[in-house]
Length: 598
Image (cartoon, helix red, strand yellow):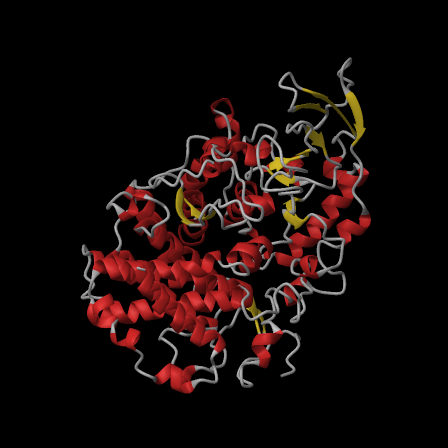
């Protein structure tokens, strides 16, 4: 396996850093001659396909650059220090510069995604040429896995950068420098590839490989195909303005039908399901339960010493303590916008899992206690060291996977597509299933049945789906792409600024939010008991409680949800970084007014 991974690495390094060496790319190196051996043998081929995943965990790739920053700021999530202008906040505030110091390196996420694509291209070519990859065979599965992993890299490139170079064959001297392609061409290729992959890979638990969500399965492939169909037909910024695709193959009717068919296949297969409770879902995630057949469809598999999902997004820990030895000030880089907690219905069980108003303070004798934050700082409770089964000791990484796609999204895509094609009554069962999990059974009559049954028009159902997406996915950084394809990005960001202003002033929809909280340490001598978080809780609960003003929400911080000099609808994508523009032999340019000097 080491020989195979070295072979893949050599090819990739040649692509990324030896672009002037035409001889290297064209020479029949010994490892190249071994493709017939590697890709006709299932064991060797698996080693090569496993190598496609290596770039996910590289320092400046998904691990430390893409996952921590893409998807902030939205109408539900923000970088918690957005008001501090630096390279980090600039990645979130819709005024990202092409020379951003976090990203303008030859080894950042853009480069690593194309590294993964090159690895996949080599595997796909080798398996097609030497492997006879048929459904039901291990080599067939490996081809399907390679196609799906390549689609993941492309899907993330497309949502972050828009039009990008299309590379579906291994690099040669003739293809070192190529311009951007239309995203429409790439979307169509990915949709075709995933259709093929769905025929090659089994359902969850249909084979030993698909018993874990670390490996690709049919439910994920179909769900990703549905997600891409919705994105391809959605509204988005093109160089000539915000519009839908002009490609006749990517119309709403065609793409929504494809998405609905794929989602219904997953739903009807019975091979995935919602977890019994929202808290159970996230406890299992933090406990690193990767058993297939539940809500998680596929996760980016980080080793214990790689990946920064909790390191970045968990409830903050000020110091090493009884829950983690990941280091001081871990977690808490981002969180829900302050009003999100108050937009949930109080009976919605997703609220307290998603929105956390406290941190863990500096440990004394190794033990830290919860401390209440100010109103302007919340954390994502979906990510918690205190829910882990493993005690993290790595100083920079926690090793917890990225939950890339889950069954709840399948239900919401099905609802959206069914509403558009067949009307609200066809969408209702899918929306009801999501809400049944969210609310206790005593609330189902009102919060599920009556609520959904009242959505009698397409517009009402669509608006409810937009809201449900918010309540379900806050903290997962899926919102930005959804707002873009709905053409609601600036609209919802502006609504969020108004909501925060109203919350600060306790006017409008937040007039009954308390201005004072009361808290005390619970019997476990770690947790807080808090009174006053819920609307209308204004009576002092009495002895033992300490009062805290619940007003701090600075206008400056509100204003920096996005750069006030920028229209977010004209900055839906990041710029291609300067190092790649400069090194592209004048083939790459940035649109949308970003820098292009090369």
